[in-house]
Image 1 (spheres, rainbow, N blue to C red):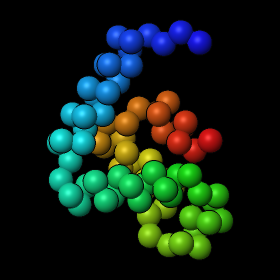
Image 2 (tube, rainbow, N blue to C red; image 1 turned 90 degrees about the vertical axis):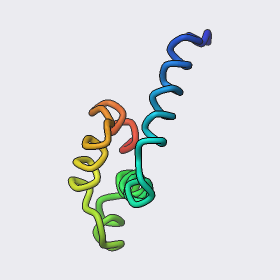
Image 3 (cartoon, rainbow, N blue to C red; image 1 turned 90 degrees about the horizontal axis):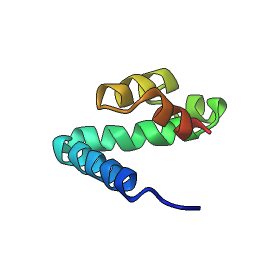
Image 4 (cartoon, helix red, strand yellow; image 1 turned 60 degrees about the vertical axis):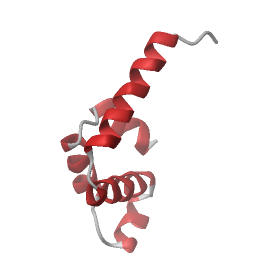
Length: 74
């Protein structure tokens, strides 16, 4: 598999900008949202806190694309 170095570099720059622009509270929310989407539906309900829909909405608000969110849920 051949890596497109330009594409990889571009993605890393986007991630770096995102991390720099988030405050501490948002970084924690982001981690919770990602963990929530990786859980089963039942697991997310049992854990309480953020719902899967709230997690998707938050990640979209900080710049995640629908495709990136979809990949997290797989």
